[in-house]
Length: 413
Image 1 (cartoon, one colour):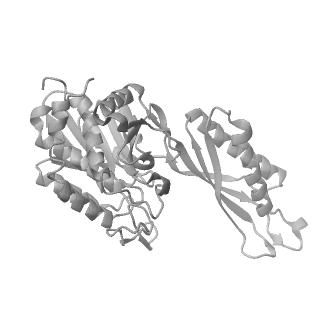
Image 2 (cartoon, one colour; image 1 turned 30 degrees about the horizontal axis):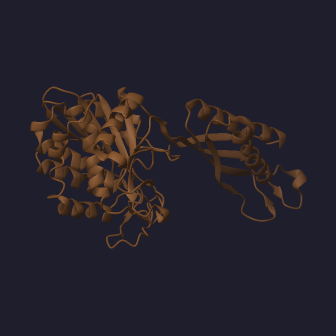
Image 3 (tube, one colour; image 1 turned 90 degrees about the vertical axis):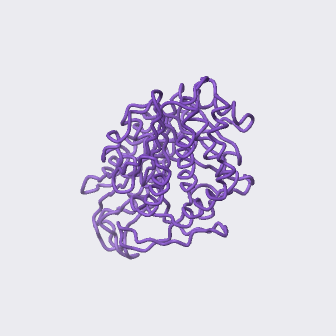
């Protein structure tokens, strides 16, 4: 598909006259972040902005929203923007930095909250695209759907929207789009790639059992601390000796919890393990290897009880459809020129693909640059992560509109 430059120019003609208002709204979202599945005020403000413009909005679950802009026969393009913040105290030094706190409903504890992953930019990108397509219906045909998804940070939001009937409130999309502001893409640029772009990830809680004893009489017990230590060392051989050199994988033991006193051998130990892979078969092999190693180390240590495995915070592989990505890349090349770049796959993980996979829809996901000074740019989830306000804010709208326009603005409309 060739980009209709006249249509895109019209769709983006409001960028300059609305810039100050959009910056003010972005600052509002930045200063008022909310935790995953608790984004009540964020969702309310998004809904207010959309309804004030006359756009149909459908709630999905507690805080999910779907905006549907129908404009005659044609393709259906859906685009996701995630809306939740992180339990992080912002340290960006921005004059509009978040000082917000919120009671975590899961723990009952008050925690600082910040948009330390750029979801405030994602909100504004999809919101800006919704308003652009709504205001300029004379230059496009089809349906644009804005999906405002909660709880990306806990891998719960996309599944929540599927469970609460997102498929019932919008027409079936032909394509599903998503973007993320990154420090690894130059400021003002966009980056795309076909195939795996974000890794599959899982966290695994492993409990191994020993036999308690006095520290002076270890022969009377089974020491789960030593057992856990041997497991940690042995796990390092999975990537180095069981995964082919052409593949990429990570196995990290992020925590070990055991014991209360130096002279007491405890009865159990807990390991928290995180895995990443760009291939589903590699991920399956890693998980099987972890369980095999843990079980055999337990047997070697005379563990009196089988180990326990709990998988949580599971994120699917984000695997960009080649044809959809090629269409978006061609549109980006035409519009952004030298600012349209190849994106190196990112080892982070997302629940973005849950919804299009559930709907059976092809998708693509790209990155937008957030920092002019890349050498000193903090990574996502860093307390200092707060991308440059401009051109990042405009770029998010431009990329969303240009990508969707590849389907919605055929020549001659």
